[in-house]
Amino acid sequence: MENKFPKVKLDSLDNLWLQVSGTICNIECKHCFNNSSPVNHSFELMTLQQCKPYIDEAVKVGVKEFYFTGGEPFANKELLQILEYTLQFGPATILTNGMLIKENTAQMLHEISTNSIYTLEFRISLDGYTEEMNDNIRGKGVFKKAMNGIKLLYEHGFLPIITVTKTWEELEEEKVLNGFIETLKENGYERPRIKILPSLKIGQEALRARGYDKYEYVNEEMMKDYDVSQLICSNTRLVSSKGVHVCPILINYPDAKLGDNLESSFKEYELKHQACYTCYIFGAICSNFSSVGRDA
Amino acid sequence: MHKKIALFGGVYSNYIALEAVIKDVKNKNVEDIYCLGDLGAFGPHPNKIFPILLKNKIKTIQGNYDNSIGNNLDDCQCGYTDPRDNYFAKLSYDYTYKNTSEKFKAWMKELPSFLKFELGNYKVLLCHGSPRKTNEFLWETTTPTHFLEKLCNDYDADIICATHTGIHWHRELNNDKHFINVGVIGRPENDGNTFVGYTELEINDDKINIQYIPVEYDYKKFAEEMRKEKLPEEFVETIITGWWTTCLEVLPGKERIKGKY
Image (cartoon, rainbow over all chains, first blue to last red; front, side):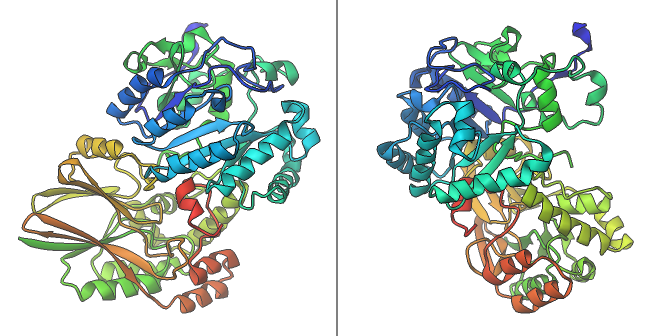
C-alpha cells in the first residue's frame, strides 16, 4: 500500500511558512483543518528568537516569500517584531481572522510596511457575507470584529485579501461573490480582493461536512503530465514550535514533520494523505497567487 | 568600449506603440533592439506585429502568450483564479488566437525562451518572466534581493532582464549585478499615464547606465481600433486612462494600491 503513492521532491524553497501562533486561536471555527482553538496547545507560539534561524537559513537558500499562520498570528505578542525582521529580506503575508487588529496595531503595521521595499499582505478569512452566515461557522460576534479589522487595514493603506472557503454550490458562486463584495464595500472596504479556497476535509471540517471518499488519493498515474509546481510541497516548507513540516496543511500528521532544521527537511515527500488530493485537484491553494503559473 | 541596446516586452498587439518605440530607438544610436515576448493579447489585429518585428530585425524571445498561441494551447498561462480575470483573459486570448495567422503562429512557436550574450564585461541574460520559468512574475515588491542574486549565480549572469508583469523596475545587486524589468509597450503602467516605455542599456568603459524611456503614441487611434474590433470597453479604458481594469489578481498589495482598481 505505502509504495503506490507518488513522491515529490523540493525543487526550490520559494515559500517559508511560519506557524507563529501554533494552534492557539482566539476563536474556534467549525471547519478548522488544524483544530486551532483558545485551548489547543499542540503547537505553541513561536518567539522572534525561535523564528530567526529559520528565516536566516531560508534567505541563504534563496527563499522568495514568507507566510505567517496559526492559529491566530496576532495572538503572538512578538508578531510585529517578527514581521519587521522578516520584511528586511522579502515579502510577507499574514493569515489572520482580523479580529485582534486595533487602531494602534494598524498604525504600527503601516509603519513596518512603509519601512520595507517589500509587500506586507494580509489574508483575512470570512465564511459568509452576513453576520448570521459567518458567525454560524466562525462563532458569535466574529463578523463585526473581523469587519472592523478589515476596515482598519484599508484605512492604513493595505488591501487585505479576503479568503473564503468554498461551501456553496457552483450555481450560487456569482451571487455569493457579489454578496461579499457588497458587504465589504458597505463596511468601508471599497476595493475588496477576494480569494476562494477549497474546503479541506480534515480536522473539524471532516466532522462538520464529510470526510474524503475512499478513492480520493493521489496515485502515480495522476502525476503523468501534471505540473508538480502546483503542489506546494515542491516549493514550500513550514516551521512550527516542533520543527519543520512539509506543508501548512499536514502539521498534525507525524510523518509530515521532516526535520529540526530546514536543511534536514529538503527531502522527498510521499503524497499519502487525502488532503494531498485536494491540493492536487485545486493546486497552489495556500499561496496568495500562483506567482509561478503552470509549466510553459 | 561603448555599446547600447534597447529592450522592451509586452507588445500586446499594440502596433502603433511598437512603431513609435522603434522610431524613438532609431534616433539613438542603438545597436540592437530586443523584444522579451508577449506579442499578442489585449489589442486588435495581432498579425500587424509580425512584419514590423521582422522588418526592423528585432531579436525576439518567447513569452507565455506566444508559447500558448504557437502551441495551440487553451489559454494564456497567466494562471488566474479569479472568475472575472479569467473571463477577460479568455476573451482576449480567443480573439488573439482566432486572428493570428498560421505563419505567425509557427514563427512564435520556434522563438527561443531566453538569450544570452556579452555586453562589454557583462554577461547578459534575457528572459520573459524569470530565467527559471517563462510565466513567473517578478514584481518589485515581492522579489527579494537575495533571490535575484541567487538567480544571477545559478544562471551565470551579471544582468538579468525580464518583463511579464507590465511594470518596469531595476535593482542593483551585490558585485555590480543587476536585475531589470524592462517594462511593456502594449499598455500603460497602471499609473494614470497613457504613455508606454522601453529600457535602454548602455555600457561605457565598463560603466553601466540603465534608463527607462517613456514614449508617447497615438493611443486615441489605438482605442478607436479596439472599439471597431469590439474588444471590451474595459481594455479600451486602460489605454485611454492609464489605469488597469482587469487581470488585477496577480498584483501584489503595494503595486495594486497605486492603481485605481
